[in-house]
Image (cartoon, rainbow, N blue to C red; front, side, top):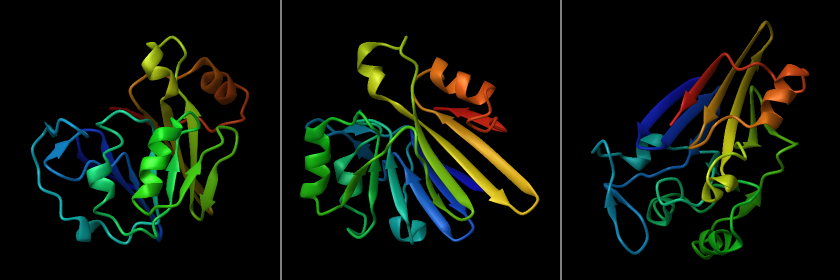
Length: 178
């Protein structure tokens, strides 16, 4: 599995022939009414990231769901949103011409060799953070499995910890907190 940090909160993931973008902020600024500069400053050539098989959005904050960045992408790319993504955000993404799918935290998506699952963040986070989903990426080959947990904006939930302890979820080989 190749993980590429695109800056701020954005990730590019490649596993075999499958490529994901997670929380893409692709321009020099982010936001809706007020555009805020991206840190660290960088320039991204969107065409170099293509083809993209799936965009994953963990929650609605401007530094994770940037409509201007989504507008740069081909409309045939499906968008997977967190289970608790506000409907107004889903409608805004659909108005851009994308097909949006809401994730089920108990069911992941697989496209060999990659499995993607959006898990709930910790409940002890501030109220606005309660909608955050964390991304569990598992790459499986014949003799090897690698699992990475992207701990987005919040602590790992007790539900996720319990599922790992019980063997219902794999133990992450790495956790990345952004």
